[in-house]
Amino acid sequence: MLSFEDALKIILDSARPLGAERVKIDASAGRVLAEDVRSDIDMPPFNKSAMDGFACRRADLDSALTVIETLPAGALPTKTIGPGQSAKIMTGGVVPEGADCVIMKEYVETLADETIRFVGEKTKGNICFKGEDVKAGDVVLKKGEILKPQHIAVLASVGCSEPLVAKLPKVGVISTGNELVDAASVPGPSQIRNSNSYQLAAQAQRIGAIATNYGIAKDTDEAIDSVFKKAIAENDVIVVSGGVSVGDFDLVPGILKQNGIRLLLEKIAVKPGRPTIFGVSDEVFCFGLAGNPVSTFIHFELLVRPFLYKMMGCDYVTDEITAPLEETVKRKKTERKLCLPVSITGKGTIKPVEYHGSAHINALCRADGILGIDVGVAEIEKGQMVRVRLI
Image (cartoon, rainbow, N blue to C red; front, side, top):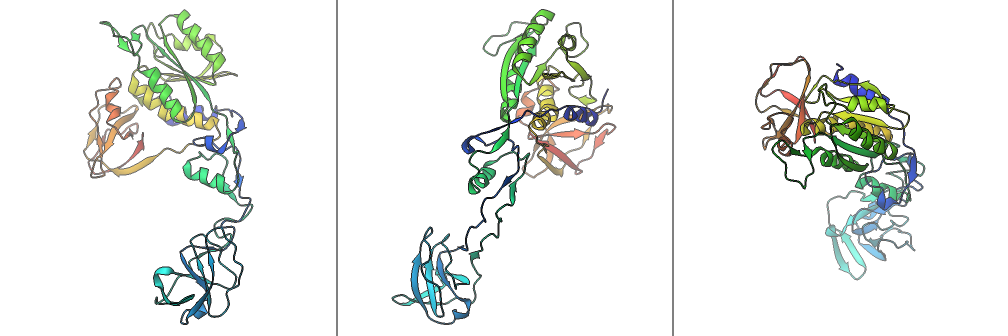
């Protein structure tokens, strides 16, 4: 049985790039950059006023100043500021030659038409100088960056209207089990509704993957093989839930092997979700996750999500916080890493949510993150600082 760390390394080391494509900037949010982006201009592109006020010479601040020009944003100065002169300027306006500061309008007294005086004690320069943020040719965004709204603004500011991004992975989701019925059905006495397919597809879509939900495959070789063959032909990655343990009807590992999938791992020392499998072929990657919904959710976040990002050229860094534990956590068995759903209290402490085991999907709806308790650790005391992976 592999440690979680060893399993994750095997999975990430197996990732193959998907290739790249250019997309319109307004369709690029959430995509992963496939090349560095450089600025084509200095930013700011000119000496720019940071305030509404008057551009003048600092040496003249004790004197009355004649206003020789008004400069709204977008206008070019036509005059140079000389001794005893100023230009009325708006935020974002081009600072005229000769001026070395902009005095805020709030600290200006009007003496007469076109004549002002600075009445403050001192002033900052209030000028954003050409190229102080970025020089032409500078790398402003790096390959592997996940494009967030602030990155989209940077793309626009440097004229990158069609960024080169990694292609999106196609992810096929399959649930197995004779006990499963669709969400629209009323379960019989021995049945439960299939939640995993919808959950896993939503998790894949949340990171931008193109997800296809293939629904339920009954626990027969023929049923699983048929849907699996279809999924292989249409996807880069397949995520199967259920049928991966050692029971009489756990048929997924055998079906994968029959379809040319080489299994690289079959058990991980993690609770929940020990019977997790991962396999590869020349065409597709396959994850087999334990059927209980908390297991499938956690293992998608811990293993599948970073793998999909790796395929897109991104070394995914999880969102984590460190905070004190609200109450002592104990467990008896320590041979596996425990993933425990927790919430962040109003006091900023970490508290386990009510959790009845890996079938208790409602617990995740009350959780803000997952607390990992390492192998060999039986107790974490109240007040101890812990790291929580946010979900």
